[in-house]
Image 1: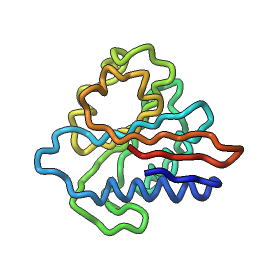
Image 2: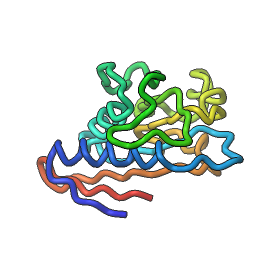
Image 3: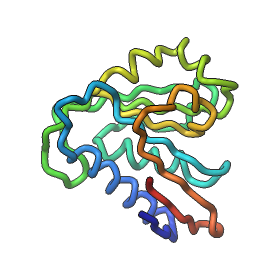
Image 4: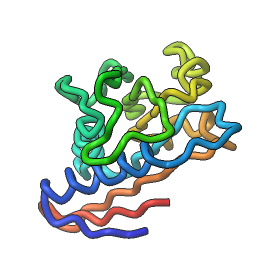
Length: 162
């Protein structure tokens, strides 16, 4: 799927739609891993903007900033509002969104020190990874949703979902 985003409001709406799709999808019986979304794109393409709106769609009130220097931030999904945007409650029971910025990492080995094994093996986690190509060794053979964001102008972006 490809979509042209013309401004910040459209990016926010699109990220919320993606959050709704992830949240409202039936959970496979054999799900034993976290849901992983890889965010690909150049610096300033809108990966963090997408992430802010995605996280906000889960009624998380924290200020979302890029974890460029801390690498990882964990947000707890409020239990009292297990509803995304305008979606109705569903089969999923996600508890955390983990936002990772792998830009400064040299390899996936560095993620192991941050508890990668535990977060990837918890099906109640949604993991958003900026710069997933930096930790590709950890993502090989994993089913991840890919969001590719390309600059088309000052505010205009092309987003491709894989």
